[in-house]
Image 1 (spheres, rainbow, N blue to C red):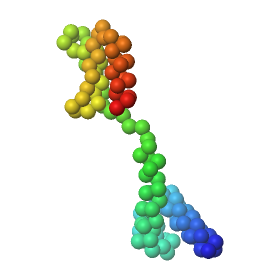
Image 2 (cartoon, rainbow, N blue to C red; image 1 turned 30 degrees about the horizontal axis):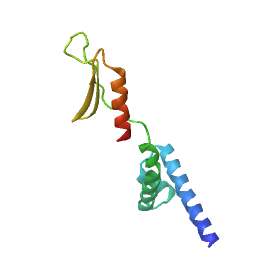
Image 3 (spheres, helix red, strand yellow; image 1 turned 135 degrees about the vertical axis):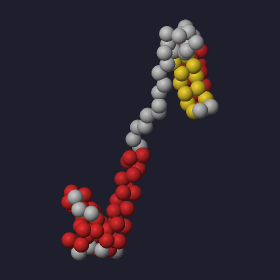
Image 4 (cartoon, helix red, strand yellow; image 1 turned 90 degrees about the vertical axis):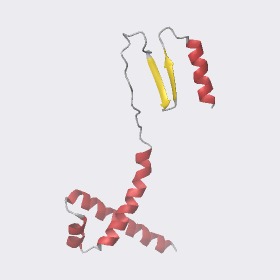
Amino acid sequence: MASSLSKRAINRQRWFDHIQAWKQSGLTQKAFCENRHLVLASFQRWHQKFRAIDKPAESSSVSFLPVSVMDTRHPHFSNLTLRFSDNFSIEICAGFDPNTLQQVIQVLKAS
């Protein structure tokens, strides 16, 4: 059983090395496989496997939401709008009560 796992690990490392070499080569997948006498379909299958492993790390990256800056020189504009979705936003106007804002934030955290 241990030799089976070892062969599997060796095969995985071999394909990983091939894919890394291909990335550095500048060749198409087809040309790379022809030069190394590799089966293109196998290469593509392993490439997909390694890409699937890398994706979770990418999804944990930070994403930014759009921000709208409004001209505050006009009295009918708020100083700050926190938009959580198309249907939900909080407008914080000049002279707001900080205690009320703190209470709103605590309620939002609890929900």
